[in-house]
Image (cartoon, rainbow, N blue to C red; front, top):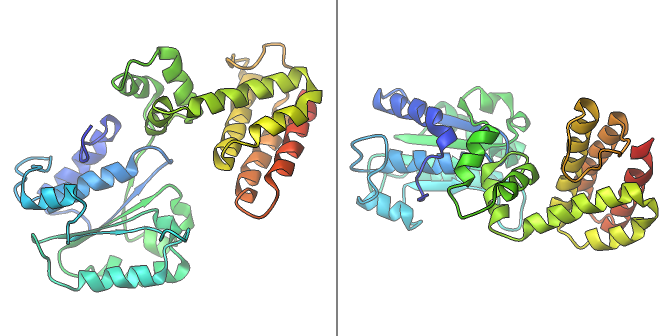
Length: 320
């Protein structure tokens, strides 16, 4: 998989993009949206490469022209990326204004400029308002590509001026087949990684190539143990609190979701005993609390107390 490959489940979106480009009907602004982990940014990078390529004769960029080489080296003067700065979680109005100023300049390599804004939903209100005029009347031959996993957070005025391209997660079978091409991983590990990644092949691949699956398994085993031994909350809390907070709460929420499916459909869950008498309403409440705690974990609230409180509810309430 090179830098500008399009993922198998993105072929339909790529053909739409290429047809519009060939017909000279490509909108000035595209919005790549969909769940996290679908490869939206990778698709945006492939589109950028094709738009800037100087010698492209087909759907794919040539990879050898000056433009492609500059882009591969991360030094293309006509490609602009706008993301939150290192010390921030938002895209500021000053960043958008600087980008607009750069679009006013002449191109350095070819005839096009491309801007990628990601995650676009991180723009402040002032930044989004500053972007509006560029979406309506882009300077020069510029294409703006916005990437978002939560487009609902963007103003309607922004969304209405972009051509939406919804990138969905591939089916389980397609995702499994794609992952099978990366290393000699047992089918059980691939299935486990996809479950831990909530169906995202890219995130699942990351798990397969690291030790993160061990952490997910630890969480599953700990939750199963607590259902049998509610008094072990303190010990489990001491072990799990060492995990990265974002992964911890995301996986706790995911485990609740898996348990809800098992409770409602009598579908087996590998880590959950068939004798576990779980109730969907209690599990849904715990899932909601895990999602809320994931946000709280980024504040000054003590993570160990959040976790202990949640585990107590899992050990006791989930069995009612």
